[in-house]
Figure 1 (cartoon, rainbow, N blue to C red):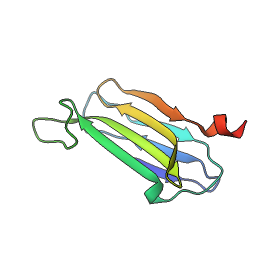
Figure 2: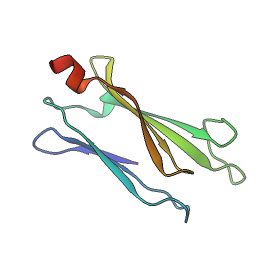
Figure 3: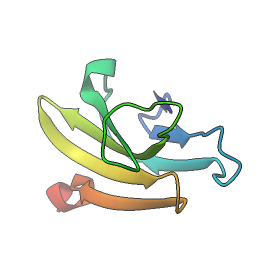
Length: 97
């Protein structure tokens, strides 16, 4: 995983895998303030539901949470098996209306 913010405060999340079945994914989160490393949390899960990978059990899902002052404003689940991104929480646009 690679997460960074550009000069316009857009946040980019890049997901990579050594699996031949997973193609690189990228998504973008528009935000109007800078974030820090402590604002980003990644929770990993294997196919069997464990939080750490082993030789026998590869990582399957990453849940990426981005917050400000402890409040999550974007949370997305990346599935490395089905090559999908599911939005769990996306409150950026909802809070600005």
